[in-house]
Image 1 (cartoon, helix red, strand yellow):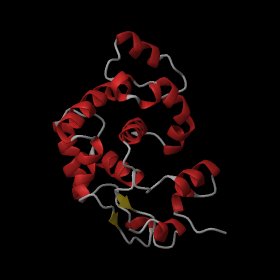
Image 2 (image 1 turned 90 degrees about the vertical axis):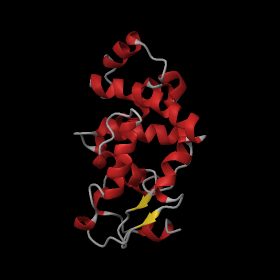
Image 3 (image 1 turned 45 degrees about the vertical axis):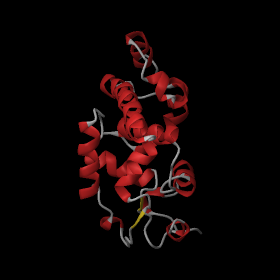
Length: 188
């Protein structure tokens, strides 16, 4: 049996996500935007709820083409609100559009969103050494700093807890517990 982080449990969907994606450094702007969208959509819900709808999100949001999403109008918002395959919360849908616009602005300023977001960790994942689930924080001083900066730039659904989950998802931090097989694999 493979040792995994506690949260992956025995659920195949969680195991696959944990084993293949969670904590792996992401540098592709489209994928960075996808995770920003999914983490915001997850607010108040379980991650499983989002994973189950992930493919529907890709279809509904033009495979996270943030240039297209930035152009969405009210008729598109209504179409998305009627899409049972995604979280139909109007604020979350609108935040995806708002975030696409802000994302493009960050790209203009920094050359890429990747260059912007990874500069907060000096372009190298933070390697934590957590032994117990209780040791893993829900937010950190750094996630609060990033959250404030994102909000200042017009992003929505980017509170410090969402930002920390984002950092974990895109590999800005290695929060696999030390007994997890992925911990050593992701050490840089």
